Image (tube, rainbow, N blue to C red; front, side):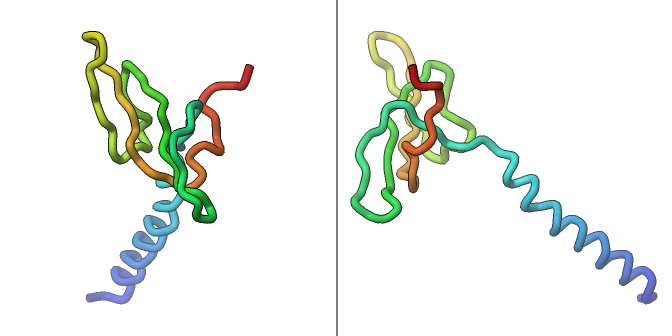
Amino acid sequence: MRPQVLLAALAVIAVLAAALPLAHSQGATLCCDNCGSCTRSIPPQCTCMDTSPTGCNPACKTCSRSTVGGRNSFQCKDRVANFCKTRCTNAA
């Protein structure tokens, strides 16, 4: 293999590797208005009691669907560090 081709391939790999964290950080962040249970660890690992008729936050890994009163609702069942630190809506 020619040195120029190898150098070009390494340059492409380096650019892709540098861009990977940027693409990962642009995803949705978890937020919660109605905090559920939390562990006593530092930082606390918490669940969120928020429900939504349209689905869970894209950052949620374990989305649970339930039917209450004939209507579907979705709740994120993840236990996340500082889950309740960021509100989804502004406080009144």
